[in-house]
Length: 460
Figure 1 (cartoon, rainbow, N blue to C red):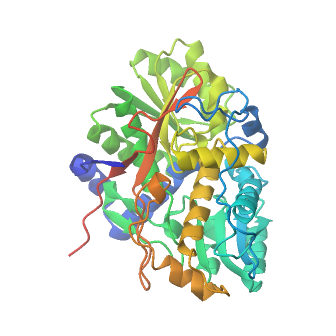
Figure 2: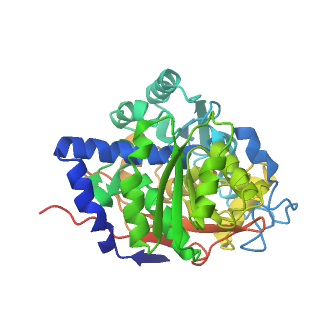
Figure 3: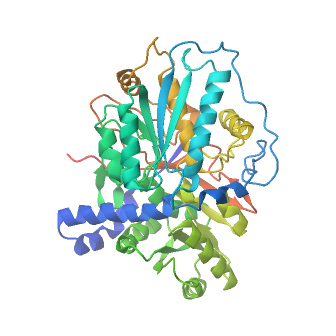
């Protein structure tokens, strides 16, 4: 189920942007760099250990996930299928299990293994093939990521690689693209997964052999103001990273997106990790009547800003999107809104209930879009290979993925995806809007209903 908004209002700031950026090459470079900087706030989450503060959630209510109640989920669904006896299918996973940007990506390893165990023990494998998952840690380090990516490429039993490493994806994406292996995953780099940067009329294609299924960063950027509108807010301000120059260049994008969604834009302020407090920024937000304060620095800084602003009398909502929007926001006690690039873990949909029950049975922390996005990717793989032959190789997987047409997995993907041999994957321009109130997540636009943005028209 998808709702669409019209993108026409996005061009209101185009004249100002064009005056500031006259060279087309510079224009594109700044646009891409700006979106990459915005992605830092979306992909920078709290440390891995912080996610463990939210225990397994009750499956009975769409607004209960992320609570501290114990699980009452049913036993994972089974099909009664016989045990798989054919040759194993090996999936490689490159995940940022450790490192400063790990966040929810740190839970991908145990979650992917829980999925494989569930497939093998209750689903009969994939058409009789048992699934094996081989996980290697990128550690948020480019050299480590490159070495481990090469290990998976060299292991000819690995038929697909799934990538969850926002800090290193750009450094290894070309290596992976040229490997002849199908690549899935979740990420933010525009040159890797593609993007439709509508404010600059730039469409970035995904790399060959990358099958984009999660919301691309351009959708994550645009959904921030859209979530403020859905929450009924009227005046938006942004706090962004002070350490990277490109962060401040995001101002035209935010201004255009706020205007499109009918929000007054109060401007952008730079907040440094090393700052002792953010009193000045908060006093300004309160004095200006801001009621939606978007946090586009790291999750840690965003939570500190929220705490300081509440101390200064701020009564509005805060914004956080992408991997930053997970159960670590709950202890703040504040109201939050934004967009996520993995399906809502609190959904009442039966397929999501099965996901929760599998994760809870395996005692895996799952209240993060990194894990839900991983589950959807692996379920797409399972569906694509449903009719796999007695042997499965890399070419078979590429052929199977390039046969996928209009597939949404019943709402587990943000939009239907279609892949075609010889063509790069298109950007995924939908994301799920969430609200967090009174310690509970909810979906204000409907269960598993993603919010979509109109695409930039292709050039003649």
